[in-house]
Image (cartoon, rainbow, N blue to C red; front, side):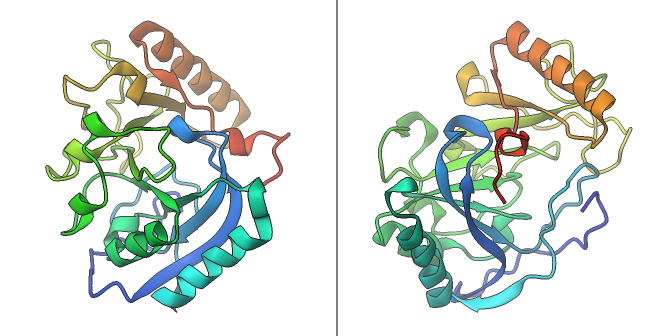
Length: 251
């Protein structure tokens, strides 16, 4: 958390065991599926260390793939029709582990998967599980999707065609005049770094801007105002992390 986590290297293996931090029902609070009741699978480990990250994703537990699937299905059974058929695969960075067998199993069980990633990593087999962004049908009940929140200046070239949603964390004073997107480093607070941008064909509605949560009311208010300004000026969508609102009591 807060840039103090150990950076781990991608270790793929056969994907039959995963390091899992937690599995729980909640709502998706960000991006194009915000507000959707779903199941979160938080995997342990990350290859980056972002100074503003407030998520505990370390010290995961090794779980066999079959046990991961059983636990996820149990949450859906308990939730009944209150939950959408959506599993959000998050972290940390989900792609530090081989998640291809897991996604195949989840799809086979009739569940769609949304992966939240920083876009630096990729692995063979993912191209069979995700439609290119231009072909993605957001209303399809079995459509997998990738939400990329760039934290570095360059993305893995293989992931770019499959990114459904681009999400940027906005901090006041660290946005570019040209496009309103971040020019501040996510790895070293206060250091300049032009984060990777969407390619020219990406529609503005696929780009979400989200206020940086600095756990300080005054700073958060300024960041929220900046994110709103950027959304209005450049035509992006505003993402406000609705799962953190006081009226929404979720894990």
